[in-house]
Length: 318
Image (cartoon, rainbow, N blue to C red):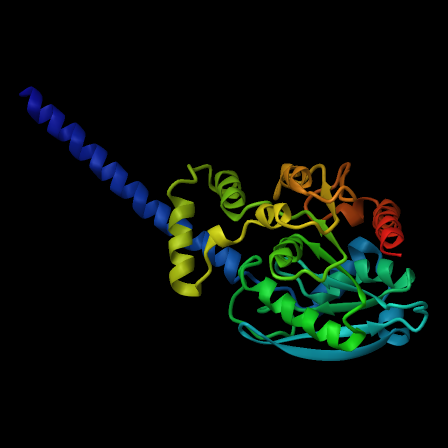
């Protein structure tokens, strides 16, 4: 066989394999995007059962003691619904309020374990369902892109209810942590943020997750996912980079991350901590804790971290 026929065959095989990989990458990208934007969402009943079994939650105070008021605000995809938990033991002026954002696939019931820490401290607490989850409207989620605008609407309502001078703290877990960090680029009326296991940049996170889940190169799978995302949802991965929001903000931030987290690596919080400009910011890596499991790993330590951080921030505020 002539040499140029051999080269032609090799070239043809290379083109075929490249085309086959691109098709495979597109299929994987579509599946990845679907898992991120339209996951199977847990019901409130499932959330209650999970919290009871794994966090030892007792709902008697939430069901029978706490004074609650439902609310709804206009979000990007429709109504965002939640509850205000009024703390009748609140003393002093201005009022202190914590707004808590839950993680991917969950709903506001998952925020109650954190709500209790703030409530015991004398805070009023606002919990709500992100779009697509719980009782809120929405046909998809966007890992912080639209959620930050919904959160801003919730914060507007919170300010109307408690006053423009209220001491306002945000707490978020996983996707909720990304959301509260992204909120830093939208508002200048936040007193402190607690971010539990957030990723620092969407592209970086998706690349790590893609390799871990598929054992394939992340390029061009992540790029295909982003193109599909922008066309279908208007959601651009490049626009969700919490580390950039952290760099531009002077709000004190408490970063908490499970040291054994393999879903969102602790290096994401470590890098954001180094990027934080406020000297009151903190970083806590919880030993033996996986993703969003820092509270589960050591509930007492978690409460000590939150209370210690707030002691410091409130002391400066006074």
